[in-house]
Structure formats: structure tokens, C-alpha cells
Image (cartoon, rainbow, N blue to C red):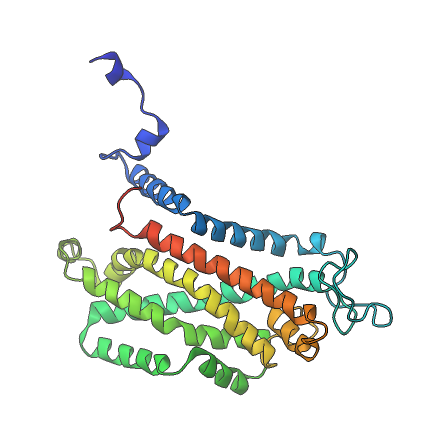
Length: 308
């Protein structure tokens, strides 16, 4: 053995080893390769920074906000233009718009996280069961999926919220109900790809039940594609939530939700543009961040991509 052979492996060489000694090493190696691909994409990294900033702002809104988001000086601070005292100006009730935007980031995260937590598992379960079972099960589940896909998301969400009643919780439920069908389609396509593979047949020969095969061996294979689609859908979820708030069917005043803020500022859009412009710009930035992040994750998690 030469001196060079005895030299210990660096962390990078250990992660990129072609013969990992354990499952943990293999997982860490795949994660490292994915991170290299992701970090090489500057726009995707910018999207990650925007989302991190959103998380920090939402967590520290109580510290960062200079004023109360719900109470204002109606007598002396109504519709003030952006200034050193009020960076984004004030609204028609004398409330500081910057403070309301900072607190509104919490409601934005509340909506997107709850929708993802509700819709993604439903779509994953429906898609994997349909793809693995096939036959009448597949036909019935996919026809139900087609019914939901036949309606535009916003129109169906409007109908559901109108039936359930206005409110942020009902808006989240309505958006989640309209968001799961694309995830089911993706999960079904992934399941059909691996259903007849040697890997799944070996598990079947070992006596694994269909439930165990779907839960332990097929669902994990669909996770990466599902994460990418969920991230890309975040911008659409934010826009639908803002649209429901704009129409008065989402968050109700005085909650500082961005769509509701735009709705209250539309009367002043010609003269006091900042009332509706500031929350609209916040929606634009956050939606852009999620889109850039989703594009980067799609490239990084694609197993067909070569190492950068």
C-alpha cells in the first residue's frame, strides 16, 4: 500500500464515493449532489433566499413591525405617502402598511403550508393506489380526479367557499380540495413506471402486502416529484388565496392578509397607489421566489440530470 492509498478520504470524496458503505452514506451522497446542482443555479438560489427571508419575516414580525397591524391613527395618519416614518405609507384607516405586510406574511405561510399538508398526501395516496391497483379502482379514482380537473381552480374554490362561508379556514379547505388532482396524476404516473419493475416484483415474492408495497416502496419514490410540483404550485396557491381575499371570501378584516389589503386599497389605486401596490408587490416577490425555487428543485432532484 502506498502513502497515497493510506491517506484518509476527504468529506467530499466520502460523499461522492461510488461504493457507499451504508445507506446513510448513500443518502448523504445523493443530497450532496443535489445541493451542488441546486446551488449552481443562481436564480434558484435567489428563490431560496426569498423564501428564507419570508420565513424570517413571518417569525419575527412582532419584532420587525414598527406599528400595530390592526390599529391606526385615523385622525392624523390616514393615507400618508411613503416616508421615513411610514416606509410603505398608511391605508385609509391610518394603519402602517409595512407592519401589515410583515404580519400578513404569517397568513401567507399559514395558507400555503396547510394547503400543502392537506392536498399533497391526498394526491399521493389517490395516485399511488390507482396506479398500483389498476383496473376498476384506477378507472374510478382517475375519473373523480378528472371531474376536479375539469373546473378552473379559482372558480371551484369560489363555489366551495361560497357554500362553506367566508373565512381563512374555509378558504384553505377549498384551495386544498381543488389542489390535489395534479398530485394524484403525478403519483399515478410514477407508480405505473415502477409497478412492474424487478424491484417491486422482488418485494412481492418476499410476501409483502399491497398496502406495505404502496406505503413503504412506491410512495417514497414519488416524493421528489411531488415536492417539486408542490413548490411550483405555491405561487398559484398564494394567488388563489389573495383572489379569495380580494373578493371578500377569504381572510376577513381586520386580518392583514395581502389579498384583503389589495381589496381595501383598490378604491385609492389612482391617487394613493401604495395602499394596493405594496401588498401586490409582496405577492409578486413571494410568488417569484417559489417559482424560482421550484425550478431549481426540479433540476436538482431530476435523477436523469448529470453531475454538475
